Image 1 (cartoon, helix red, strand yellow):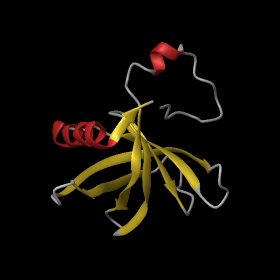
Image 2 (cartoon, helix red, strand yellow; image 1 turned 180 degrees about the vertical axis):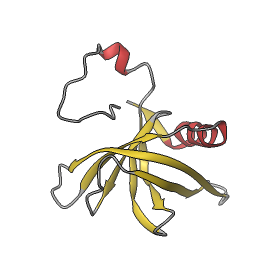
Image 3 (spheres, rainbow, N blue to C red; image 1 turned 90 degrees about the horizontal axis):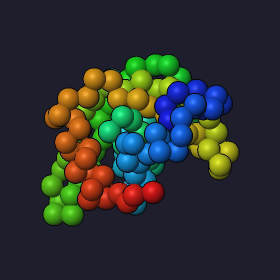
Image 4 (cartoon, rainbow, N blue to C red; image 1 turned 135 degrees about the vertical axis):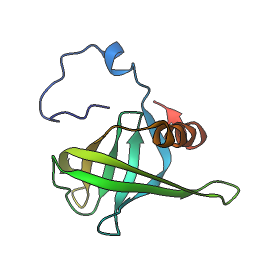
Length: 127
């Protein structure tokens, strides 16, 4: 997943882009804006560097957010991961009623990365 300017090509090979495994989630996980206490959108693509969000409203690019991903495991255990991320770009989705936004994680700790890796393993699939 590329988190730079979506309109500028990245000067790397396809092998470089795959150095961090990209995962598409089987179903969308909710992402909450902690400060506003409202649903921001749903994760549709994720890796250890960042994620892509789909939302009904466009997200302002180059803004830092305090976010939380919330979900329940198959055994109904509630998981919450709080972290900071910067919105890098935002554009219309294939469906013009929605927007896609690329986020880069800011200084993720193991407390953030480990549950994300577990979530990817449990619910995602390799592209």
